[in-house]
Every structure is written in C-alpha cells, then in structure tokens.
Length: 284
Image 1 (cartoon, one colour):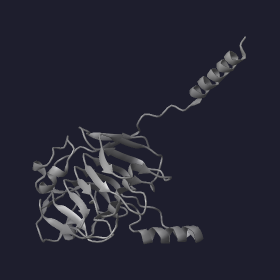
Image 2 (image 1 turned 90 degrees about the horizontal axis):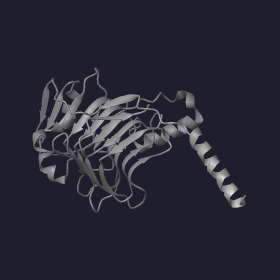
Image 3 (image 1 turned 30 degrees about the vertical axis):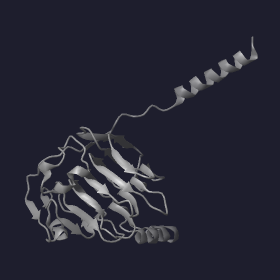
Image 4 (image 1 turned 120 degrees about the horizontal axis):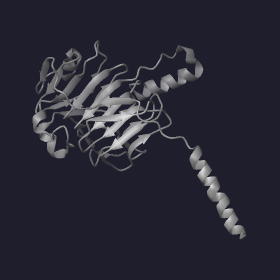
C-alpha cells in the first residue's frame, strides 16, 4: 500500500479523534434582559443649565431621569449605588423622536439627544463600583471641543481611575490581604446612544465594560482612536468569568479594534447594536 496513502489515513483518523474529544459548548445559562420598558416611578426632568449630577443622585430605583434634548451638559458624571432592585433610566427627553427600540441609532438622531461631554481626560459617565440597574438611552456622549486625550468616554468598572488601578496593583503585590473584594457594576445597559470622538481628538476607549451583565445595544460608536496606543470601541478585560460575549448587529467604527477582551474574564457582556434584539444570552 502506498506510504503516502497510509500516512494520510493516519492523519485523518487523528484529526477525527481530536474533533471527538473537543468539548461541546454549553447552552446559555443566564438571560440578560435588554428590552426597553417604560418606568412606573417618578420622572426627574433636567433642563439646560440645571444640575444633572444632582438629579442622578436623587433618582431612586424605578425613576426616569429625562435630560433635555439638544442641551449640553459638561462635566464628569457618576452613576452611584442605590438601595433597591428597580432600574433607573437616564434618557433623552425626546426619546420618542429617536430611533425606535428595535432599530439602531445614528448621528442623525443627535439633535434629539442631550449631549454629555467631558472637558478633561476623565470619563463623561462613570458607573461606580457596586452600582447596578442603570439604563442609558438616547444620549450623545463625547469629549468637549479642545479636551485633552480621553481614556474612556463611558467607564463601567470597579476601579474608577488609572491612578486607583495602579495603586491597587501595587498593594495587591505587596499585601494582598488588605485589598477589598471587588464590587463590579451590574446590570448596565447602553441603549441607542451615540458615543464618539472627533477626527482631531484622542479617545482610547468608547466604552469600558468591566462589569457583570453589561449590554451595549442599538448604539453608534465612532471616531475612537489614539495617536499613542491601541484603541477600542468597546473594551472588557477585568471582569469575573467565565468568558462569554455576544456580538450581533453592532456598529462600531474606529481605527483600531471594535470589541476587545483581554486576559480577564468577562461575565455576560452583550454587544448587540442594530436590528431587533430583545435580549442577550450568555453562558456563565
């Protein structure tokens, strides 16, 4: 028998045996609900020139913070932990004039969105450690004109600054017993938001999604680029496992990476930007 033929049979058999030994992916074990639902609580209206951070601080689970469409709010705004299990919606006052919940938004919707802009390198919106059940809907999130490099436009993380991250890593290496347990943000949905930089400004990440059950749906992310390092439209790298992310129908337009997961383990990261996506499923 031809030696080459025998070798081919052996290699084919080895490949088939290897395929049989490969683990079969498990079906989804967790359900991340991403459907838009009208709130039954109070509506807190924030008009041009009013205190957006104060309204965010006053909001209770079940409430809606309606931010005036067309108005600009400049600063670094925090979403803080709340007592209770309901959701807080932070949304455009003209929510009915942007793309419906089963469609992706676009820059054409910007006139019907409030503009949330950072004047410095700190995120425009930071979801603080332990915060949960927030939905951002119909917001334009961007650097202010002339702002320096922005590291993240939206920061969802248990560490709120680059300095804090470095200090934690140093302490972890010297005295790990004094480092507190991680409090990841949980149940954070970014829905029909326009998140972008500009041609001339450096933005390293559009969204950092180091939380559990994080969804980016029907949103438009563009002009994310950094002249000194790699950049990512959506980045998740420091979250609990196991590792699973779902990406479908998303629009992320920038010059480096669209969605990137690093060595950390991401739990329930759903990236669904485009067609009708009522929910994301992820194996946990």
